[in-house]
Image (cartoon, rainbow, N blue to C red; front, side, top):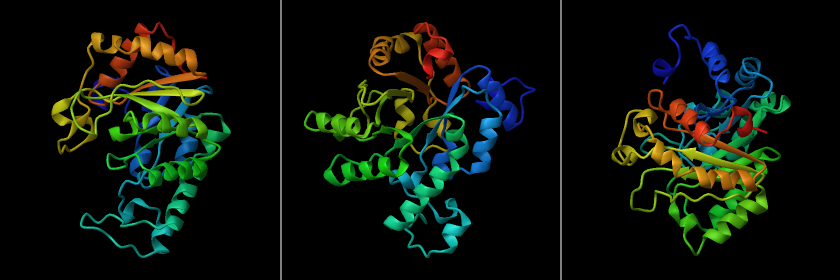
Length: 287
């Protein structure tokens, strides 16, 4: 995306963010899934964007029950503990104390965004093995509580949460927590780790993510996320979402539509197309 969309003279991270913010008024930060953010980085995000710009922050992997390696944690946390590791050198069974400490560090790092009203939602994207059961419902309650009062969007990657026997309980749980259900568009494949395109409002914010429909790479081992999401939506495919998004906009105070097909310039190109289809200026997608 860096080479394909940004002009040749836009080279530094600072210039890229400023250029992006001159074209869109909201962004989803995925780098925070791989490493904990810092207050200094968040302060730079604040300084380099207009006053009404909104950042959505993907939760660090440990917060959503993904495996992490010790080197992904800050040095003070590593120094204070000894970890048991699995065959991939990921931390086995993080203790509740460790997880709560990581929640705290993550949340404190976002204070510059919070202070300037630039923090949108924290995206909790749970892994495919996070299935619908009582223990995992309790974990969602705990996670949302630890992130309070920040707003949270929850993305499931196992279809059990939308099973007819579970759907009402799933949406009621999110509604009771004030957490947004994340609607997704992804490849049309059979199996429990691909979710149907359900649009639902469970909070004041509605949140939609377009992952692309690249069936060939969805379950494949790929070198980068860009390869997995290598998909440019045709206009007819975007049109399928116009009415569902319009309904979300009627029922929610604010609706965000985010494109995660991060190959080449596909995401910003499709985002522009969707804005045109919705007849929406950037100001219509933020508070």
